[in-house]
Image (cartoon, rainbow, N blue to C red; front, side):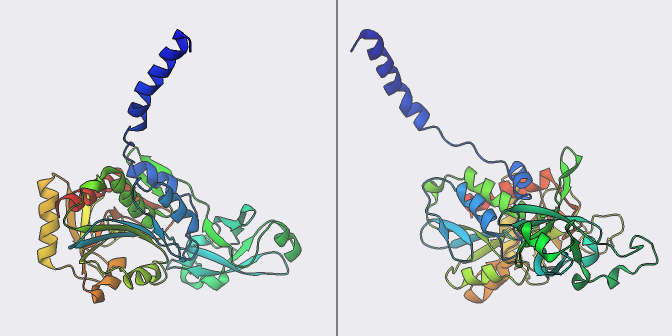
Length: 365
């Protein structure tokens, strides 16, 4: 070996351990959210979302995934067992029938106002890729005399620009395909966006970003599980499956706090403003968090200078199905406006505060 080659070999030997041992950069929950809202995942069709999340699991942890596409990992051992869970599904539609005229009749997946879709462009996700369509509006649908409540899910008919069932099928459309409103992110300010599927891709993003910031080898004297479950919007189905085998002492469901911080909403209930920090969801339609446990979280937040808000709202959360198994349900949130619409609003400060709070609870609980 000549002198030049020997120098090159020595250089590589010295440098490879340094580059190979480089620690992965922490993930940004805000940037993750902006990616994840575009991954389709109507309830029952969460596979792509689950795959994306699993691909970003911290190294050295054993990923687990069931036949429903619930994904999770655990670290540490012993009690207490802390479970953090966010749901990967979103509300949407599914193709139920292709008419002789080539239009699509649908069924709903999750709770929403059907008139939200009227006159709107949608994407049908086929095996051959997405196909664009539009929900046919009623004549004069935008006139005030029309009753929005008279437009139901079974009134939705999607036009594909074709005139026969054969032509529709030639596009790759078939019964069972998932459908979402065509998504886009509207940046209202540098720190506020409005888009579809913030519920609960924001929770998924916060949990995934927190996972990247935790040194899992240092989890001692407790077990911590991070889980992303499915079919929350149609009855907490994925969480119910997990509850059969996971028996946590505490479950932190990471999901939207439905806030009334909007011009036309009543301010008598659920008014937590955007931009003031993470939310401890003290009471909702499925759970009342014990005061002593709320105070524990409050102490963790204050000790770590993490801004938070405390409030009551409507809607359920995945943690409630773990209560019969002995868990205490402590939902964690961010204030979200216009939930289940295509302009769900979220503030960056709130999401990043939530991410910090998850990390602090894992470390300090």
